[in-house]
Structure formats: structure tokens, C-alpha cells
Amino acid sequence: MRALLQRVKSAKVVVDEQITGEIQHGLLVFLGLAQQDDLAIGKKLIDKILKYRIFDDEQGKMGWNVAQAQGGILLVSQFTLMAQTQKGLRPDFAPAMPPAAAKALYEQLVDYTKIQYPQVETGIFAADMQVHLVNDGPVTFNLEVV
Image (cartoon, rainbow, N blue to C red; front, side, top):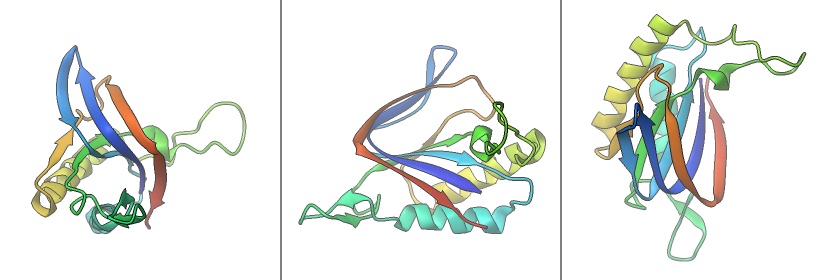
């Protein structure tokens, strides 16, 4: 399972010209699910995201997590994060979890995240989403758990 975290000043997801999720200051999290992933692995990753210190503290150092920074989380499914790109000129999506299983796990992870942290917005699974963001820094991290 992979998550691409971007510290943002603002972010939103638009589907069919409608905003489906929007945050101001916080984390935009693109989430990729692999075939072997399960809820236990997902909870481990969500817990890490919630504790990951990438926001400036009083000293201007990356010492605060999203809760300490009073930010929101915009959680967006993105199967392309699981692509194999080492060979050839076309991504191989074979490692990605099949759509039906991925949707079920993604929804469980959204529910888990909302229980752990109240300020969570989402995109729409498998929709054609336009993601708008203002990256803060820019600060971007790739997290992976197995």
C-alpha cells in the first residue's frame, strides 16, 4: 500500500463539475492499493499518516502532525500509484488491487480514518476526478507499508 502525501494550503476534488471533497490547510493523500493489501495494512498506513510530522511547529521545523497543525485530510484513491514503471514505456498496473476489492477496502479505510480524525474529505472511487491543490512548500512524501 502506498500513499503520496502533499502538504497543501488548499485542495479539492471535482467530479462532473461538483466539488466532492475540499479542505483548506492540511494533507492531500493519494492512496494506492496493491493486490496483497488488507485492512490491517491500511490501518497501519493511516495511523502513520496521522502521526507523520510534516507541518511547521513554533520553531519552523517539521515537528507537527496534521492534528497538531489543525489541518484537514483529503483522501483520494489512485490505483496508478501501484504501477510498475521500471521496464518499458507503458505503466504496468498488474500489482494494483482489482477494482471491486479495492473499492471495498478504500471505503473501509475512509471509515477508519474518519473515526481516527474528524476532518476527512474524499474523492469518489474510480470517478474521473479533477484534483485542484496548492502545494505548501512544496512538501511531498511517498509512504509505503507492507
